[in-house]
Length: 354
Image (cartoon, rainbow, N blue to C red):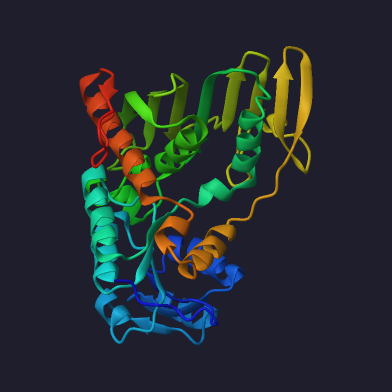
């Protein structure tokens, strides 16, 4: 059972891993949301020094066991390499500490479901860091779809492409999918999560993948069919000389177009528009500017802190971990599709058949 936090004090957090995910994403957002970073796991001397500079009051541990020893934590953030997510999250759950796991929850749907089932059995809150749900760009798209600004949506295209012909020297490019490497367990998890939020669960998928410069795939495409009948095309690529556009949603009364999402370049910068604007609604020769909706990724951790103080912390968590299990089931089916060259049914473990 989860340990009880003191509602009068900011939640005390332990971070597992202080590489790009831990130091660049989680730590700044935790600070912005008002949570206290109390302990960090890292053995890299440079990262130890970075932790001491960023959070002088935090204690550095050399293992997850030592992070958890002695209690005193309200939340553990798992920001280690993806192949270790299940292992490290399981240790926190067994210690009775609520957990945020960076995406992906596991390397496949079955291992992710085992973690969800364990958390439920131990009554320990568990959620997944799907921070891209809080991006201003996605909030803008969500508003447009809900307002039927494009009429009846006929096809949605989501891309996350970049030009990186020489891969980075890091674990993600150097290990296979079974250890968490490749774009499908990285960028694809964001894109599919957004597609499911917009149009509902996925029934079937057809995929094509390649590994041109890395061990795991650096080029992936999937055509998914949602239970609703909606068609969505999802693409991620690290070797695209002309990246983008990030979003193109075609409907009965027009098309929404966005070139980039602020953190990546695009070959179509005119699709973004001036400051304060996120793309265009296009109807032939007509263009209507789309005003950006505000979004703050730190809201994820504000929601986590509120959930920890709620009577039912799991129900109040900002991301249902079973959403992540479904996304991983889509990726599992996409791998089978890419190998077989056929459309594959998505079977989400732990989900009762309809």
